[in-house]
Image (tube, rainbow, N blue to C red; front, side, top):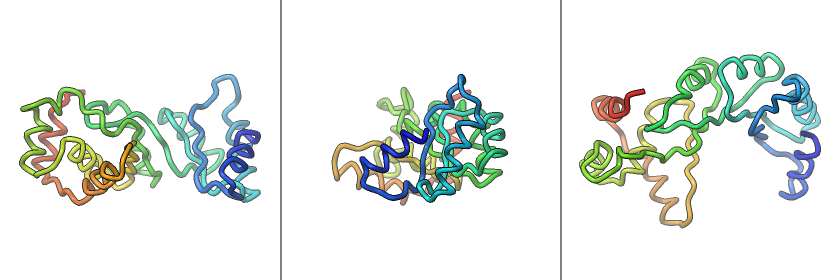
Length: 178
């Protein structure tokens, strides 16, 4: 952990990483040992906050007993919501939730599908509605969609201005049965 954090600091030319996200808990190393090292780096000022990725509620609870957890990053999007219990825990404990693969929509975005139809009503693209849905879903939601161009970044940012009605939100939510 320490070596990776130190290498990141050097490669990035920083004295401090504001959010250090542990992308997988190593099942072969005690959680207290992994997070303890990150907590030491935080005490030294090299890390501002600690985040976790791909965790269960139980792992998140255990981690929070060792050191404050600022964020969690799990697979979550309109079409795949298995991490709903983790999101609910994050909401209850004011922990940022970073959905990875936030734009995955599968068949929902196909021509004439619920996402496509609603996007046309809003004068938006299906990907923008997928982001708007995430933002309406939770106040702790922080989607970070990948992009390859400035135009795509601007398109993603514009999604924050789309306000889904409760009916639109429900329509999209119910389009995928868990």
